[in-house]
Length: 144
Picture 1: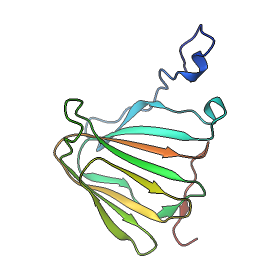
Picture 2: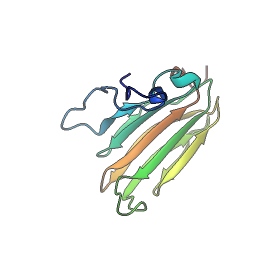
Picture 3: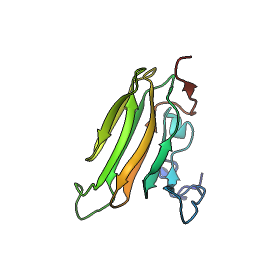
Picture 4: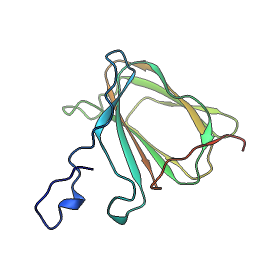
């Protein structure tokens, strides 16, 4: 994981990590910065993505053995409330639909069934961040 170099605390500053590039017609574009596994002894990971057009972001209901946060933000630095999107997230074993239509943070305690996650409508790109409190990402299909 490339970091800034030459200072006592440079290991705490992430500058890039060569995420794979999306194709021109992709619905999701990864952002290059992605926290490393067990970064500086903190057991977490984070991933940033731009949501670019309607489509399925997460296809199946599942759970995790760790807590997770899903963050949806405006990609417009001039107006943090500019969020022309409708994103559906199903929650719980019963698959209750929840519509995200404004900047939001979703808390997913370990074991909570979630998914699919579908971008229904999107007027402009949205910034999507996944933060999970584990050095490794593992999903378990719902019902197991």
